[in-house]
Length: 391
Image (cartoon, rainbow, N blue to C red; front, side, top):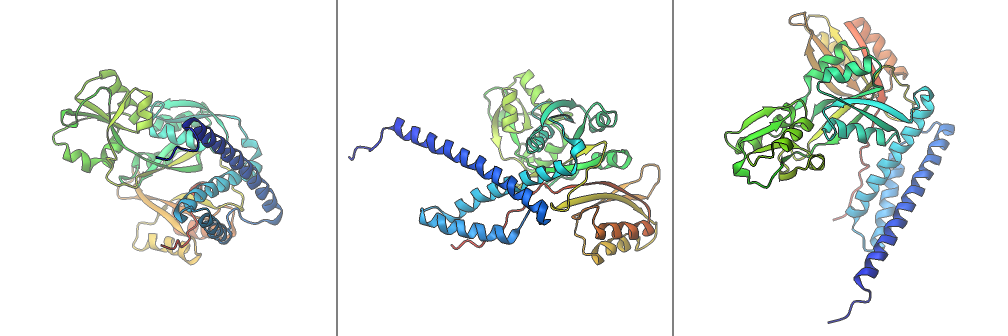
């Protein structure tokens, strides 16, 4: 048997050295992307250049092959790097566009205690802004909004829709009556697990603590568990806290595995969501709207009430189609106090300040009984540039 050329300690030291060098190079690359953003201000070029990204990826795949690196591996790594670069440039440009909103520390309200999905979304969103958080836990969505409205919090983070359970109606209803503006969004992968405080078996679980949304998102798996007593909580964090307090072999909570660690819980069963690709989109609200530079992709959200006659909504949607405005969301909610009347929520991928959006608003104002812009904000979800990988 051939003796290894290096000892295990030597190998680990070399791996550590290379990892440190990689981190240094990634930091250097990120700073160069900032210089790119500065140059784009002078030339008025958009942050993303899909054609250049595609050429870059194809070149890197070829270079990777010469180092015996798989094309999919190279692509996956650089998709992440490109996403970080785009978001880093967007954050820089947004700071220039909104100098009054520069805050090294932000007070942020969210549903649940530390470890809730809303808390994870808050941390993820503001970490990209390089902003420290003062975290303000709330027991209801109404409280999240109220803290911002009264100035006790600078921002509120609210879940708006999930790929499995759909729209979160309570949040849409709150948006109908608040004076707050949507200033940002973030999409978070949701990884539901059954979490327990003690060693136990799946067949011993007869009581489950959960927020209603995760329960709905995991309904198919929970159905296979038979007759389970469901105890609803105000958040996933509260559900985890309850199970941690009980320390019983027959109870479990639905939550995120890393969040469960905060409460001393361990996963008994992972991947229990109805859909493997389970994501929740969160919105960020504030008292004042933000300006979105034309160099980055933007989304505008508005609400409108149409006339109570056939074809009224269709006429409004035709305005968007005729102006080639991409609508990404259409949601209807009843108008409280007005039976059979509905308010429509619309997300469009266009900057509020653009000529085409201003024209659309002018036409929609003539066609609707009521219309209000809820906010214009940067699109934070960076779609990967696709390249063909030879099999």
